[in-house]
Every structure is written in C-alpha cells, then in structure tokens.
Amino acid sequence: MGIPEMIGLKRLLLSCAVLMSLATTPGMAQDSLLIVADEWPPFSGQNLPDKGLSLDITRTALTRAGYDVEVAVLPWARIMSGAQTGEYDVITSLFRDPEIQKVMTYSEPFFETTVRFVQRKGGPITFEGLNSLQAYRIAVAAGYVYEEAFDTADFLDKIEVTTPIQGLRMVAAGRVDLTLDSMEVVRHSIRLQDPDILDQIEFLDPALARQEIHMAVSGFRDDHNRIVSDFNAALQEMREDGSLARLLKKHQID
Image (tube, rainbow, N blue to C red; front, side, top):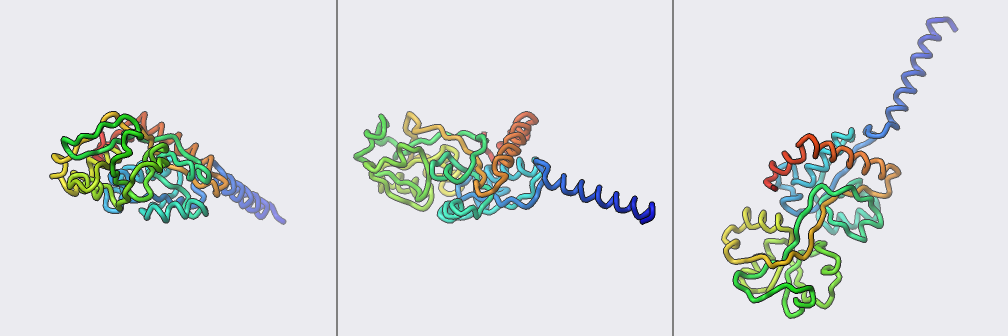
C-alpha cells in the first residue's frame, strides 16, 4: 500500500471514530424522541399554541439539549397503556403518579399548580378534610390524577365526566355539588368555553393540594436517566436566561 492510500485509510478510520463518538456523546440525538400528553388545556391540547405549555416546555428543553423530538396529543387511556409497554419515549403534563413511576423516570418539575374544589356560588359547603365531603356528589374527569388521598378515597361519591368544563357546568346547574381541578385549567376552560360560568361558581379554601407538573421518560429506554438529566440541565438554563418565563407568558400563565 502506498503512502497516499495509507493516509486515505487513516482519514477514513478517524472519520469513523469521530462519528461513533458523536453517536454516544450525552446530549446528542441518536434518534427522535416521541413526546406525548393528553388533552388538558392550557397545559396540553391539540388546538393550543404549540400544543400547550407542557409540550412546548418539554420540546424546547429537549431540543436545546440536542435531541430531535416529535409531539402528539393522545387520549389518556392510550397514554397509560403505552407507558406500560414503552411505546412512548416521553410523557409530559404529569402529576406524580405511583403507577407511572413504576415504568418511567420523572424529571424535575417545570411548573406548580394549585388544585381546588369548586362549588356553586353561595353554596353551603366548607372543606375541612375529605371526610367533610362524604355527603356531596363530586364531578371528576375520567382518568385524571388530582391528589393521592382524594384519588383513592372510595368513600366519596364521584361522578365521572369527560372534560373539566362539563364538571363546571354541572356544578353551575346544580346537578352535582362539587368539581375540582388545577386553577389554571378551571380558568382556561371558563375563559375559552363558557365565560358566563365564572359568576356562578366559587373556589373552596383551603386548596386540596399543590401539585408539581413534570415530564417523564420511559424506563424501557436504556438512556432514560441521561435524557432526564439533560432535560433538567436545559430547564435550569431556561430559568436562568428568562426563556421559561417567556413561555409562561406566551401561554398566558403567570
């Protein structure tokens, strides 16, 4: 083999080594990550700007960390089924859920919300712990996670509805006594779907819970811990440079 051929071979081997190194360097995209969330405006939704706050933040942080991403809004039941099989790389718009934690690794929270009960304006109900609500009918959205003690309280009379606005309308009409959700969800639902309801309902004090909102990565991926770490690092940068605050403003969340 002549000198030119040897130089060419060395360059080829060096190029291969560089490519292999890039393929295994943390933060570099090896393949596309599929990020999913359910319909939960303003945090996630098919018709929201950039599919809602949660998907926007998650996509932005992971893109910033060097990953190629795709996003989709899917029914919650399908998401839960896919979580058990590793069908989805990333799920966002999540409260902490013991079932999901069995198969997914949670990120640091990117938002915190307050969950409150809602009754008809001027109603007689006072919230003094879950036992104080046993006499009342409570509208809950099917499949939703609110707060662990409430979610598992089988002594409460829970009526399943399909959307938060349906529960709010039932409260306003006197068909149920209570409903509940994140303050941001309640306000967004009323503002966009039925502004007149605002004068017909009121929030109960104290709040049921303050819940942090996260994304989580499938434990079926060998690199799930690295992806979460990369997301957390990018999220911290977004807090420091003001881009996270700009996303909150963009989605009308203060």
